[in-house]
Image 1 (tube, one colour):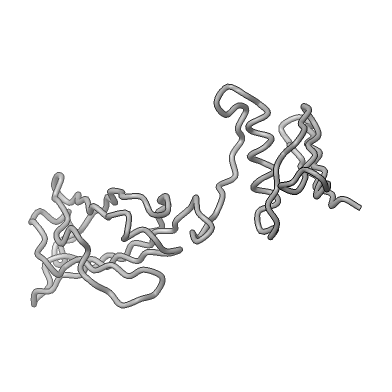
Image 2: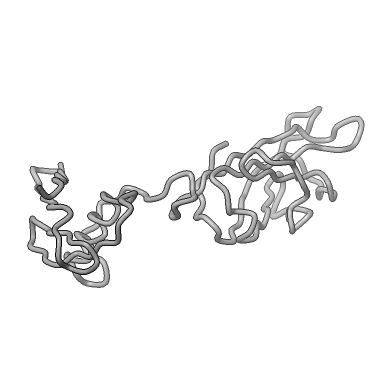
Length: 178
């Protein structure tokens, strides 16, 4: 199961378990050590909340701290440590977003306004479009369709960004200043 969560933000991950022999939903609390977390392929360890909470028959929730979501990919293994096994093993994959160190640094979105302004959306689109440029930059002018991006001093044009819409398709064209 693949799950998307915000980078470095505490979160709750829900999952279900099935009885190993009957195949029905599992109906018993888990024990410490049944849940292990790995960040970016590192060693598996007990999470800060060592035991997931049973919310109803077959349904469980595991609280992860902000520190446990500071990777690109967080893997959670839920493995019964008893013999014979009482429930089927489960593996959960969490991909993070919203940070340059996350698996997905920026989520694509169809946003009309941010804080009541279409210009804020345009500025956000430019910032995400030119992320990775090593210089600092500021958006110095904006119209409904065009932005000029200058260096932090405001003396040199870095990019011109043109936004066009045709039906449901939005196109962003970025041109480096000559």
